Image 1 (tube, helix red, strand yellow):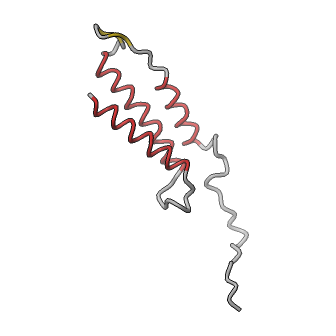
Image 2 (cartoon, helix red, strand yellow):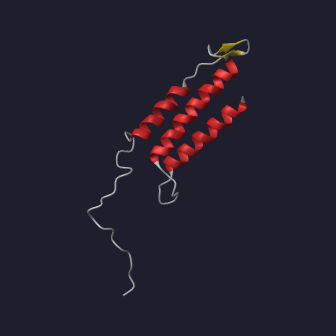
Image 3 (cartoon, rainbow, N blue to C red):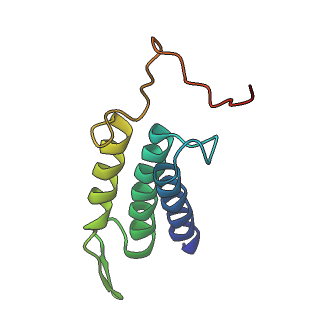
Length: 104
């Protein structure tokens, strides 16, 4: 059962790193990929809760209130859909990039 918690943690961290670092630093950085990783971490946390406490989220060991699961899924969806970062993937193709070559 700790494998679900660990996989959720790794997925969440990779999603946050993918969103936080600009694509110039990481070539594989993508807001859509980051959003999918964040949503996946929420789903993995839900699976971990079900594995530990059962589908009713309560057992003899206690109970769980999965507040963070919908927060992660909604945050991941907002990142994936582009609502949080509307100008993230857009480039102006009409204007050429200015060269910084100063060798005359």
